[in-house]
Image (cartoon, rainbow, N blue to C red; front, side, top):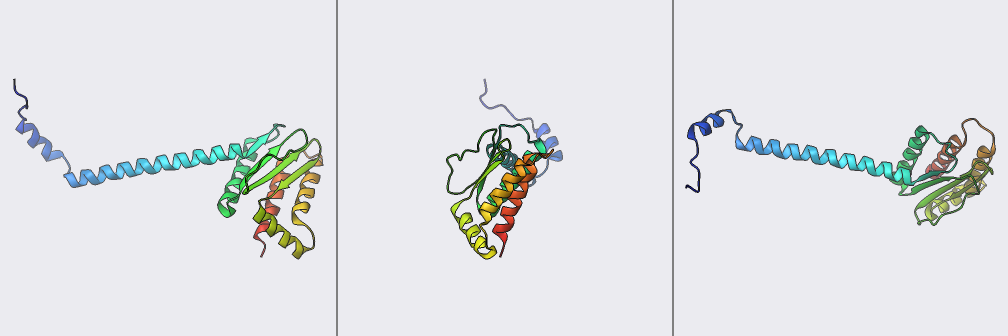
Length: 178
């Protein structure tokens, strides 16, 4: 009983005629692993963005559509990438309560039933808005909060999403102001 089987030389010679050279096979294998790694990386990056967007938003009123949530996810990604701020939006049927926040969290709480809104900014953004408020002659954060509350309180068929998006646009513009 032989331990090593004798190789079939004819089969080896026939296979050698159709096989690619070893360096080319190695390069193709590495390329395949690279493509698979990039695909996994992109997939998990997309999933993490979706998970962060889901955590950044809660709606007790069930008034936000999937498109509105995707738009809000775009704002959350923008604020995170541009300024490192985590965006959290809470739409509640009762008074908007301020949750426990980290120093880099931008919180927007909206109560359409009561017509109230709360905007809590990270300290650096709040300082930037104070400086911008001095330049404009009024407190930008309180102005945004009042506009958001008035917009949410007004009976509109589209509800709170456009109001929140306008407030986020105003906040973005105030932070980008020279």
